[in-house]
Length: 268
Image 1: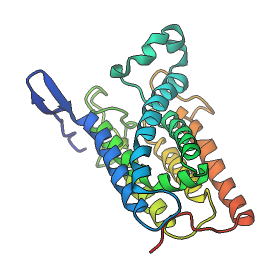
Image 2 (image 1 turned 90 degrees about the vertical axis):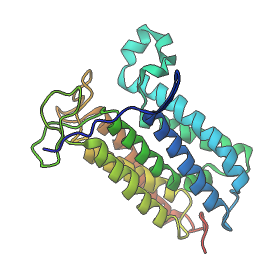
Image 3 (image 1 turned 90 degrees about the horizontal axis):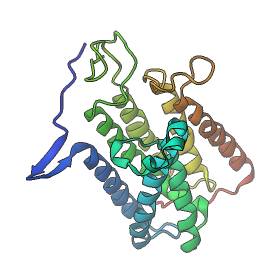
């Protein structure tokens, strides 16, 4: 068993002001996506420009925060927030959902496209390769916060997390950082560097994330207040990933049979 490296949650403290590592992970995620987006937009590609990418960052932040918060409240604790609706706005108490954030970003992509003469598929294909680095930093933030830990295990790299008892557990946050962050980035970025049918880059992202998250959920402890919600083994995260995987496979199959291959991304 490995020893969990206890982190000081405060990165910098100046008087009463504190800058926490968890919050900085969100900043790192946004900045990495923005810089990668500007790099891609600087290439001779479609309609996205560095200036438009600067504008899109604001749309994306609003989509992630609003969608992530509302998604958590609806998917993971609907009854509680039904009785205490003002608690939805208590973001400092924690509670964000990737799937809710995804819905928020999809809505942001649609609205941004309407105001910038771009189709929803064009915006989605451009943005999809920029998301995994943010997921990587987010999961590192979960690890630093010692939250969303894994199930008990006897693997050599298992850890006892503060607040989770003395039994060793999978560091599932690191599994997700590696799969949903690093590996998914490599796959989607590489795939996006060749002409593809419109929408397929975004569909591959949905398929890849859904698959990796579904896999890691077998090592991740289910939410205590939910447990397994289907078939005595399926978690809420896995249930929400099913439509992502089904749509990803179905759309890619349909697009390659029916859509003309067009350069939806930049090429050298």
